[in-house]
Length: 184
Image (cartoon, rainbow, N blue to C red):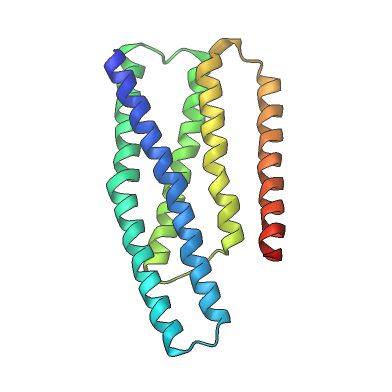
């Protein structure tokens, strides 16, 4: 069982690493396009833009299909293996964890949607919107880890309040970063 649990944790880390980095690549991709649109579009800018976009697409493809998808699939496989072997279906904390995982999977598919659109050069979000979107995975990570570690000893009222405070702190940090970035 410990080997399965270790593999579940390893691939969970891999999956989250991929989710964190893919949205960062989306941000760089979109901001490169935004900067290009603002520029005078001289020949050197056009070449630089094309090279950067091509590189971002390559990096996104390798990360998404080489790390993120396999991490997500293997996390799910080993997680369900543990769920069955350890008979955790009736554990109350597991229902909460599974709800967060379901939402995380929806987040993953929404990143797939953004990825597919960027591959076709369709940009639907700004860099700032994607920065906020990037923090959603952080919220899932924090929530899932706290639920699993604290299990039945967790006070759900404090947990929800804590998650809201954490989300507010993340949003404030994004706003502060935006202000600092605009000044530089």
